[in-house]
Image 1 (cartoon, one colour):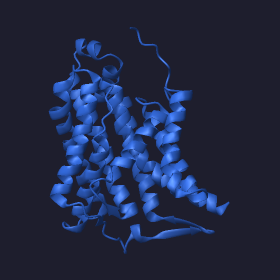
Image 2 (cartoon, one colour):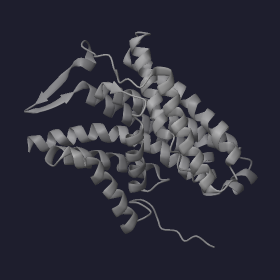
Image 3 (cartoon, helix red, strand yellow):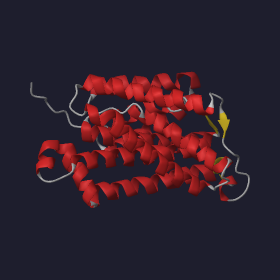
Image 4 (cartoon, one colour):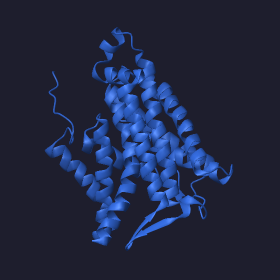
Length: 295
């Protein structure tokens, strides 16, 4: 039982990271029906920004987290303005191919600038982040607590922005009917850019958290977590913010339990098997509703 509880704690930490990345996927898809495959690479950039802030600027965790979120916000806006905005009225396949191209460009540009070597995050040996707590035979590290706390704070803040602010109302209006929202005086371009900015900030935060948790980063670290976060978004119902949160935690739990009780080699296969299963059984996801498209 104690081993099971330990795996649950580990799953919550991993699921928090997937949830933060999945929120970016689901918000962008909800606004413009685009699967932004470059989103996982924004998460990777966030990890590198945090690394350089902690290693060379000697900043603490929180300042590094904020700087990574700000830079990833600007990166997200730039990606939307340069790569996606000119293709706003193009066929979906053109935008999808562009998203893959942007993803590859960010990965190889990063590799060219910082090299392909794996970098190790600075070890925190003093202070609160270096502590761990024992509950029986269950170990809870301060890093796991920080990951959960930061994730919950960001999710609550996101829900507040979407539900209570003017720009949040604009986001919901654009997601329902872009043309009608424009007729009502909503600046659709600004709303879409804000959505990219918000999702990219969350991805940047996830990058710093995963660097802190796993202690190593590389230019291709965003590929697999990005795909798994996409699975989480689909699992919960892509385009639905609470669904992305639930999906992220579910995928994190499944992956950790498969690694702990089965074979870690199969953890990726099980995650993508879940994707296939959910598309067969309930294509709209747990919280989604099936809608018929008129032809």
